[in-house]
Length: 379
Image 1 (cartoon, rainbow, N blue to C red):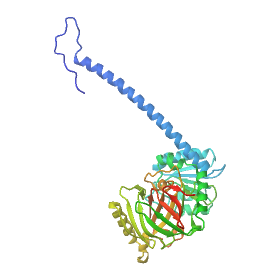
Image 2: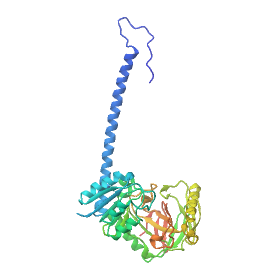
Image 3: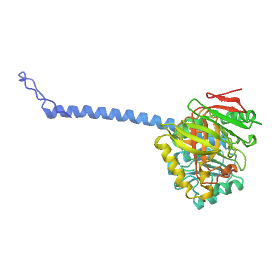
Image 4: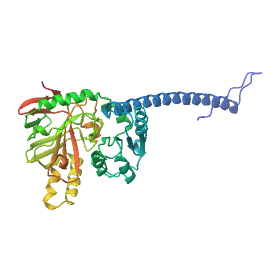
């Protein structure tokens, strides 16, 4: 702080002029009052923000427990979180307790990667539940623990990579009953259609074949029957392209592996395999990651890491492109492709690596008839 200047003029006779220490004391008092006021205002703002966040957490937790999972009285419910999702876990626990008195919240250590098995005590508890909700940093969807729990008639909702922001905004706030109805409508429109073409002015121009009976309609957010499993937020319809059938150019302009991209990725595809990828440093990194992973596989399987494993169309009107695959691939009117392992669909590429790329919008044709044009579905 700049010290106040000294008065150089001679004071009028009888006038008392405060010295510097008195002036500084007055200034300090004023500053203290201003600081106190600012702190009080900030506390009010923080309190209002905390209250608003709590309301949003509770609203989303209510949607998950009542609408998505349809928890019933006396059902055994297990909420699994980790240190990064403790706030979400607590909100879900509180919401579930209003529906059943048999609710357990368990915090486990954060895993190291997607598919990492939960600790044994968690796995053992999962086998005894009717409902399992797992907001965790890394996915437990494709774990032995989840498969065992499903065999024991549990229903499971996983939320890999969920954050407080994603849990309180965007796709999780959608009307899942409405999404379920729209997915059913789209499935009817795709019935008996075998050939898919995807085109866009960004350079995308590819075609492939699908088994029309293989479209998965379960990602609708409603997980209310035994042995069902879903990701939340939900809202997509997807299928495995027929192996060896995809050819052409695919341009990814949205996100890749849960990261927004700055430079478009261009994939050249022949007979269902990616033959080349271009698009700056990210393309180089993808090539390196998949090539390094291929070296861990038997020689006969190494080329299969380049398989286009999945094609899906987003149907959640509240989802936003945020750089998180859990949300990105549900964006209404967008589409996505994954590369790598397709064994969960019954495919031959059992390679243990899979990454997802999102196209912001696309023109999709089924059997040469317009299905989705410039983000709008055609009747």
